Picture 1 (cartoon, rainbow, N blue to C red):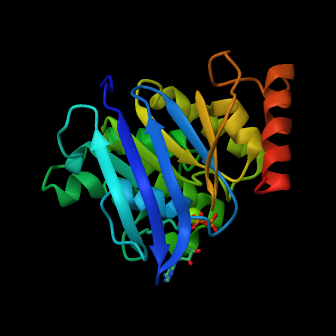
Picture 2 (cartoon, rainbow, N blue to C red):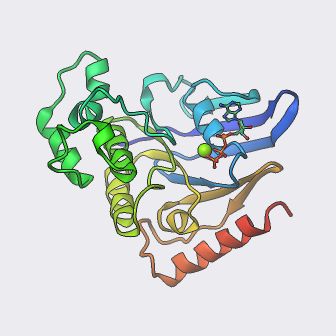
Length: 242
Ligand SMILES: Nc1ncnc2c1ncn2[C@@H]1O[C@H](COP(=O)(O)OP(=O)(O)OP(=O)(O)O)[C@@H](O)[C@H]1O
Ligand SMILES: [Mg+2]
């Protein structure tokens, strides 16, 4: 499915009358990967949850609009920062939960293929408690990748993975979601430098747009442009608010 859906989030958020983030204008362009970085607690996950129309702890004063003026409702897939797996279901059952909840018969072959693509072949009948943190995160990733939605919100989807697996999962996810409208939250400047068409650093004072390489993602880790971008992101993250 080719995405052609953009989203704009404009507004500010506060908690108990205290500003969490000042007015921002986050432009999530159709068919592009937008990366959001920023310090812990600044409100990145909140932004994702506001877009997904899920419960948050903030008072949001602003608007969220789509490029076609229609509500997002079932056109968005969301991978939360915590894996939110159902402990009583197997890996395969967790991966196919979307179809199950819609009352559809899961495509067993596609489920096993996705389990295999995230590197969990042979683990499909296990329960989440029998998996490592990084394995659980890949189950949650597989579940998100099963959903054929035009907009995908990914909250630190690779944070628990070792360097090799992380690079592989970045490549798999980008390949499967290449034509989609993706908002990726990450703490890893190298990840943003590899994957993003558009990058923002979020601070309590607002959003800082970051220049990303013009070369298409996924960019090689050791490409000079990727390394320069990673360094620039790190410097702004390190410096904090100007
Ligand atoms: N369960 C909660 N109860 C009350 N306040 C909360 C809760 N979860 C988050 N908050 C508040 O919302 C603010 C924004 O949290 P959010 O999870 O969006 O931050 P984040 O930028 O995603 O941080 P991180 O990088 O650590 O994931 C926090 O600073 C915190 O004050
Ligand atoms: Mg978060």
